[in-house]
Length: 154
Image (cartoon, rainbow, N blue to C red; front, side, top):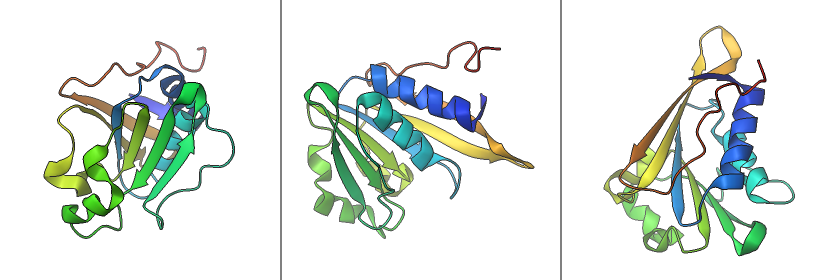
């Protein structure tokens, strides 16, 4: 699926509005692919208020969301080994009331939970605002909002 940035944001908000708790969503793609844009949109849809800065340097940011839920946003770009995940409380993720968004999930290696979603974002060469988006369901995570037939109303 190919989406422009506005469509990506609308889809992210829809995911945040409809996603069940106790879900991990991996966001992969190169630097500048839109992972943090999508994470912020999911947060907005989940009811996170205020800014959601990228957790590149802190590795983990937590936010209260609506209905007693909590959104955790992780960025694993700077970890050197999957063994470093345990310092982030990885073994307890996702908790019963948590939505966990993980940028650079491939850095978790074999420690990714069996049941999760993977959203891969790739910039379209020569089209700075377009992204190729591929969604993969691994195991049996709760449902994820699908792409509407027409995100832009076309």
